[in-house]
Length: 296
Image (cartoon, rainbow, N blue to C red):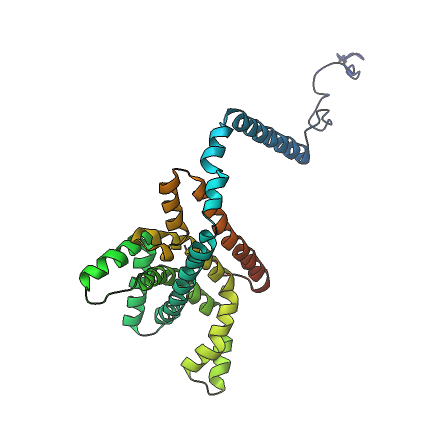
């Protein structure tokens, strides 16, 4: 006769507090995890705390009296007026606009050459663009200001012309790629429709493609104007008369005369007075027309 060896106790359920197979994988977890939003809030507050500590350290450790005397000398700043506006700021704007106008004309020609089916045109455009995009603007100014008079002593180039050409060469290499991208962004159907109406390739490019391309590239062209405004400060290395000084040249002269760095603050505010409205205009144009972006 067989005997059942199992006892009633062995089949009884385990006690609530006992460990074992009763706490299986399907049992609900009692541990609550922190939500993603809560972790983000804690991370943000830690960042704020770090910023406050850094700011407090700067405020406590900085020598504010020396800083004010060196960079915020109101007498030195007042002595720069009205020349900083009537001469330096005016010349900076003039140099920038002349360089931008020349660069834009060159850039249109280079962009069309870059897209040409004629091989030598494409090669020349690529060489020009890569050459001037690879050179620092300072080198271009030095070559234009001191190299050309030595190579061509009979030209007698005016200082304004040298600055305009130097800025135009630098700007045209970047703007050419921007214009090329804008032309390629115009749908091909626009060109085909113009050709079907009997337009020549050149007329279709001028009357149909370029106007649409410029609507696309207005924001990056505005950014290029901002960059060119800052590049115009390199004109000081060429030297100039008092009437021909731009902002950087005037600041350099005032620093030598006053032994104060306050002129740097004054011209920085002047540059911001030009670039901040242009940056705002660029954002408005980008919202309205879009942007192809500045080529790297």
